[in-house]
Image 1 (tube, rainbow, N blue to C red):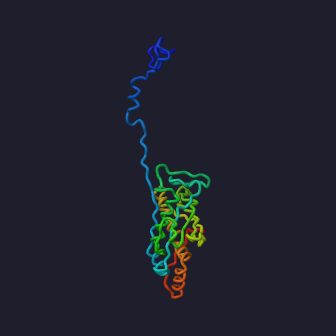
Image 2 (image 1 turned 180 degrees about the vertical axis):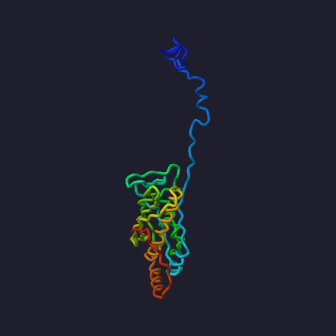
Image 3 (image 1 turned 90 degrees about the vertical axis):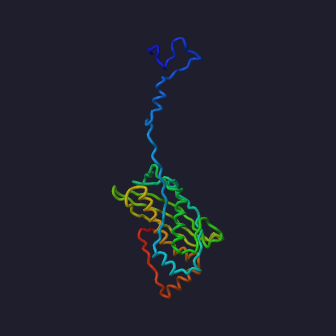
Length: 248
């Protein structure tokens, strides 16, 4: 039996269509007490950066003269299901994908990788100009698909940043395929963190640029191919780049 003065039960004789339930006056005070709700953590955003060494640029200058270097346009890449998300992905098994809470890429992976490759190919000096978007005025258009951009936890103390891509270059006017290649590159994380993942995936993309820039430039420019061949015949010194970590 409820007590007669219960704040939750209307007094006897007042029940009916016009009767209202009354809340105790102290409830709003409890709800207003600061600190009762947990604070939401700050959200952090991460980008990719592809630095190119002077050795990389020296090879391009020695192999492809300024007037023979082609122009390149880069489209937004497609992204495989499961990775088309601004949340950073990590994987502890082959079957499960997890995300870092409150740690996001600055853009969706398709744009993120396309922008990073534009930076890498532009600073490689294999190209006279590199723009985002497959402009009809460019010598070639780079398209691609991101199969994975993730952290792979191999062991409790071993973590790898992984980037898997399919790249192709087409003629912007005829759509003829001029070049294509697949890459699956891993680089170790210095520490298991979103910053470590951004650094490792940037290093993986830098390796992809170093491994593909020369082939793309020569695929879209006959003049560049001839200049490279002439340079080779004239014993022009070039730098041999390592391909460690690249699985075509």
